[in-house]
Image (cartoon, rainbow, N blue to C red; front, top):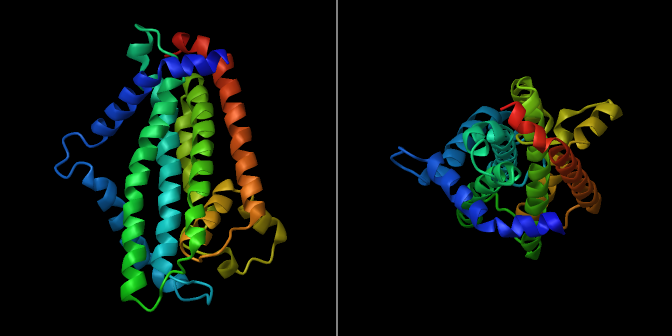
Length: 269
């Protein structure tokens, strides 16, 4: 309760840091916040040109490949951007931390939340894709009332990013190499998360390898989101239980690691 009250006490500071992060992200940019809309659109178009011919028409279950690809790309981009910014947040705020007392967890949390705000804005691209293909294409997404369940995987993703961000920000203070290792890990994660392919299309005989792919929480979160907004069906409850449990456990580990080491940060930054 003590830490919850402390968090509530500094809620206005959190709001100001989030607003500042969003402004700085597009500072000196001609298009400004419009890049939040334009960047995922252009990236998705490139990925469609590269992978569309290979994975776009190989499966009968592929309702609409552009929307399928965009769903995965938006979720993965939010995860990587938010965790990377949270990871660097303590070192980037070293000058302030050395001069003024502010709860240090404010910095990684504010970076995740500011990235989450831009992620929500970028979802407008997905809305435009859905509307366009629904009215002007024969490959229509299946729009059903299940689309109203789509915030569930988004909230779970936010929880996961908060936990990973807190853990990485702690490790990065003591081990600068974590930053470079995480870049490699994110590259690996891009290929083991079904962003531009379906697992069924890989024709993998190894059961162990399939289980390794599905152990990735982003697999469950991405498939839950696609089930709601693209396939128009209820998502697999096992995906919900696994991703939510994994995310909550990650938050607990991240909070514990951050709390145990935050007093030592000043000696290393």
